[in-house]
Image (cartoon, rainbow, N blue to C red; front, top):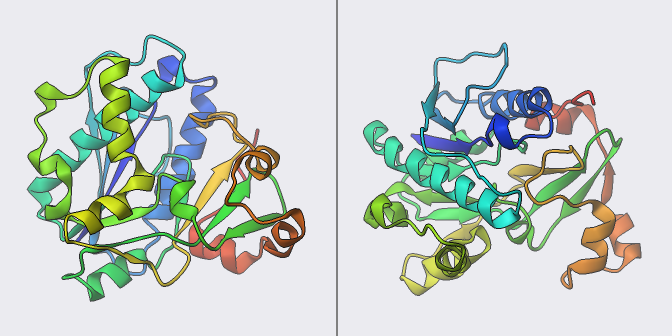
Length: 263
């Protein structure tokens, strides 16, 4: 079984709770659109989102610790990471073979669960390739080489390899300095190296597994395609960037449950 853990930001730190809820509803529908039902979803939140979609494989874990009191990115990252750890701990009751954290505004391929089910003994996979989508666009960009360094929805690990099994939440870093040291080691982009160092390497997923969505107004790390082009040294020149643009076809929309969220 594959368990998806989805940390959801609090209404108290949202620009628009209605929009956060709509983005989450698209995300959760995408997750539940799998070709096999051998999965569960744990949503970790302060408040339940305002959505109509329900599914028997989705459960909500409501937390009672305070939401971020400061508007800075570190406080939001601490909140998200803590929720992710709680979700992974709760997943132990489901005895999953693998677990994946998914950002609450991203979408995933409907083939993930089927693939993981066929490879239960694998250490796991990282999403080297993925789509990058800016809301309301008619095109979508393919990152073919380092998607896992951009997007948090990028690692599927055998459940017993998750460091959370050795973590004590009472010792979870509380100060910004402590957390920055912690986060530098446990950041999603570091997972590939960390697993290799431990002797449990993970492989690149052999197909595009997720869509990283931008420009929705509720990204924890606000950014856009132009900024990524300017700041990420690993990006291709503009010409190659344009070559990697694809029309957002009905086939892509169907595989990832990607529909337009009204502004």
